[in-house]
Length: 373
Ligand SMILES: Cc1cc2nc3c(=O)[nH]c(=O)nc-3n(C[C@H](O)[C@H](O)[C@H](O)COP(=O)(O)OP(=O)(O)OC[C@H]3O[C@@H](n4cnc5c(N)ncnc54)[C@H](O)[C@@H]3O)c2cc1C
Image (cartoon, protein in one colour):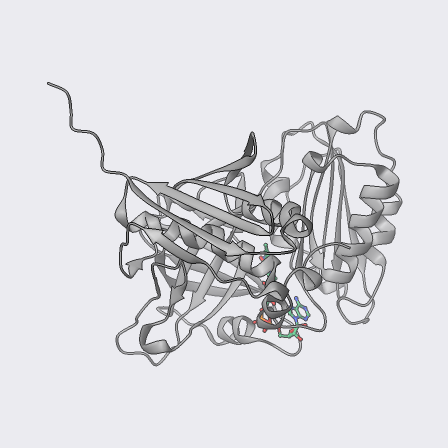
């Protein structure tokens, strides 16, 4: 007897988007950083994600999306995985997606897990480690997807409530009370013991994430969604570069590299007491770049260090990974593209923060506050 065909859930959306050609490349790149494989199929793009498959077609001033899943709950999550990056990169265009097709109603986030603070410890005066405990964390145990979004639950809430996603792919906050969220790197994960560790770089003008972390104590709750953003790829020669916010990612990558790996790791820190004991292959030179009291995001230390690297003649053997403030990100990105000519697939590099903007302000500004020029 043939087993019954699996129920498929589908929906499509079209939006007017006069500048679609201009935004298409960064939109696809941003979608791809959310654990989605982008593949060109003739005139459209196939977007394969853990929630299902989507298609994106751009033509004649319009953008058309279609999504297909075999799980009703995943339908809205997939819409969100596409609408989120598109609306962020093209924030200036104020796009409006009108969906038709199957409807799932408000659905919980498929990837949301709830974590509870197990322990907090100051690693250095400005680096706070929080070890969280939770259940069913295996989806975050990926060496190719290092980051997550944390949803900070206030301390005094008796019955914690978490967001859901509506049929437009938009996040819906309980009683319209938006919780603060920020992106962090999973410094380490131990699924057997149900543990995820995040290192928070504490900074002046503390925003909600930093305030929450500084105030955290055992039992406090945080939601975690993801994972996202690519990790390192196999290479013979690595260059890793980051400030305090990139340090957790660099530390995790160094720990997991093949013992014979060669190259450089540059970490910008505020002073000598911010150094951490990092495990790294012997042939990876670790250099701490001391700002000597200068404010984060104001020096050219990282860019200068990356400029000092002698790259192998076969750039396909090299790999660059980085995360830092937006200005340094732009400088280094430009250098890698124009002077080193490092192929795009040989680098994973993101702007991790902006010295003049909070995350909400970055999201409101869109591409100009996040992308390279
Ligand atoms: C993929 C990714 C991974 C990241 N991983 C980590 C991580 O593992 N650990 C970590 O600490 N951060 C990490 N970050 C950076 C972190 O998300 C930002 O620093 C975030 O803005 C902090 O939120 P907040 O609420 O403290 O400050 P916001 O409310 O966003 O900003 C408030 C003010 O603080 C300033 N500011 C923000 N961050 C810094 C900073 N680091 N130093 C100085 N001033 C700052 C802003 O310019 C703004 O004026 C990551 C970012 C990305 C995109």
